[in-house]
Amino acid sequence: MATKLLLTFAIYQLIVTVGLTVEPTELLRLGVDGQLSVDPSDMEKASLDFGMMSRVEPLAVFHPASAEDISKLVKAAYGSVRGFTVSARGHGHSINGQAQTSKGVVVEMSGSRGRRLGFGKPALPRVFEEERYVDVWGGELWIDVLRSTLEHGLAPKSWTDYLYLSVGGTLSNAGISGQAFNHGPQISNVYELDVVTGKGEPLTCSEEQNTELFHAVLGGLGQFGIITRARIPLEPAPQRVRWIRALYSNFSAFTKDQELLISLHGRPASQKFDYVEGFVIVDDGLINNWRSSFFSPRNPVKITSFNANGTGVLYCLEVTKNYDESTANTIDQEIEALLEKLDFIPTSVFTTDLPYVDFLDRVHKNEVKLRSKGLWDVPHPWLNLFVPGSRIADFDKGVFKGILGKKTSGPILIYPMNKDKWDHRTSVVTPDEDVFYLVAFLRSALDTSDETQTLDYLTHQNRQILRFCDDAGIRLKQYLPHHTTQAEWADHFGDKWAPFLQRKMEFDPRSILATGQLIFKPSFTTSVASW
Image (cartoon, rainbow, N blue to C red; front, side, top):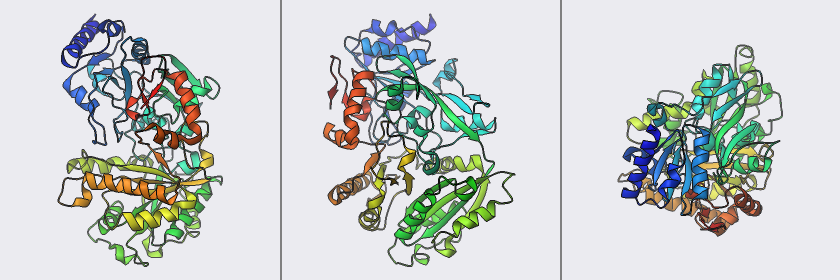
């Protein structure tokens, strides 16, 4: 009774304040245990995301108490005469408003409000030690998955660099980090999903059951269903990590070594690194930030002291080796054997040693520092690209040594991945080459007197980078893609566009879900309309 009163009050507020376009009785018939809210704090949170480049206020915010609640909400939207959309929101780490909606309800998958209301999380992680997998709620953050599995001495195999992201959010994109060359992205490390489709149907899917939905949802940008449960495979968790960084002034040597290291993925654990990444350094400020991750910054390192070629650009290889008590005696020899194969600047190798969990959660420590300085809640005009391996040298010449100049406003990651670790049946798209690179411009826009740090400057530079690649015929793909026209999306998906459309018609025929991606316009007739 209390829940229905809260729901009635919320719907009344919607009608009065924002002009609800659906019949109130449609929502009153939901019979959910969660809460539909128009609380100003809920609305403000759902209106923004990490990108902070758009603000879109929904009609309401829904805090589900179960997967059944979500099913009832989506079913109401699907059967509605006037119609409304539904967008699932995890930790809100989207860049361009992908989880926002102005004509519907945002489902808070990872919010803490439910716990304050008394019904807690819809489901806590459940670890199956013998089978080595964990069942987790779609809104669970990866940091909490890690904490739960470590209690059993286990951990997932594939990660993202930042762990305060939701399981459903990363699986709707791909989920990548330095382990991807070996284990593949997170979407290649899923046994089973529970999904609420755009018709409101709650379905379990896997390689053996509802396989079309399973592959559609993985990397599907939220277009085919809301992930309410994921079954993630586990492995014995290492105890410690040896973390190594080395500098290069020669781009060809840098990429040659990176590609050599990822080619070892089929070797025994003792003959390969567990994580391979890298990043670009274009100014002294970033080299000191890079170095301070390992040592005190009191003795700053100058980029010119390493840059033998005088280009003003350095490249940093970043690798790790996991170990525990059983391998502690051989870890040094294994690392030395691998480093001997590489052609980095001999005096530039820096090493540190830390617990496994501290390495995985390394980005959060930087977040805490940035928050303390007021530099976290700022616009983030990020640009993430998958660049074909055959054109990465052209990209370096035109972008790192060209467009960027001597300034940047955040980390620039670059590392290769093996295409055969990606399942072609999923919805995600990558370049059609055996090896491709992630190049991620993770910049922050600041309101300072330095024009090169402003949002306008950085977004213009992003457009310059994309235009350069288009003019040079570099057939890249955007990761965490942002397009605004049907032609752009068709070009993005390429050969996968036709099956993508077909899957949309099957699983979300009224285009109710994730409209913030701007792929389909919500249709409340029988056809799927496009933007």
